[in-house]
Every structure is written in structure tokens, then in C-alpha cells.
Image (cartoon, rainbow, N blue to C red; front, side, top):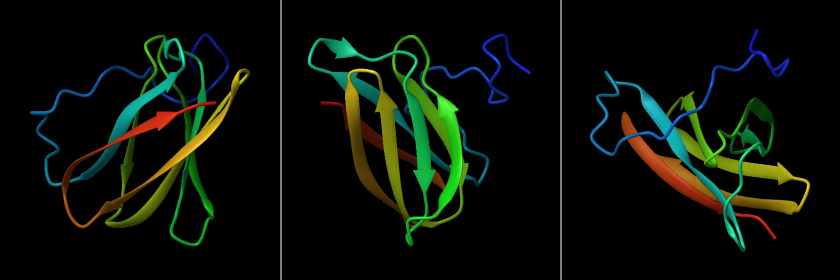
Length: 102
């Protein structure tokens, strides 16, 4: 378990040329009015809105999920507000999404 009590691995920026080894990777950054929002809780919801996973964004707002192909909603929860974005991952590779929190 990580030092913050969350069982999720530490999040880092995902390079655009990452070798996903045939996996679907949903990754991005959480930002607010003043730039990246570190520490936000980022949830992955499937096409029906069901919870699929959660990570805590890095200090720079970065997050990453390994998922299945399909339609996903990514929701960020932060003390300064909430935000969400949708992404459709039609197949393996990197699928980037930016979340604005207000």
C-alpha cells in the first residue's frame, strides 16, 4: 500500500509514445483555473455509469487507467470542485483525456 493509504500505484505523466503492449490505456491530467490539480481522486466509470476504478492524481494532476475497449467517463473529485470528461477507446493504445475541475 502506498504511503497515502491508497492502494493505487503512484501516478506519473504518460508519454504520448508509450508502448501500451496491446492494452487500452486511458490517461490524462486534472486541471483547475490555476493549473494542474494534484491529489484529486479520479474515477473511471463504464458506459452504464458503473464504478470501474479509482486512482489519486499525481502532484502534477496526472492519472492513468488500464481498461477495456468501450465508452468511459472519467470523473475528478477535488476539494476545489469536480469535473468529468468522456472518452471512447475503440481499441488498444493510449486514449488521452483532460479533465477541468470547477
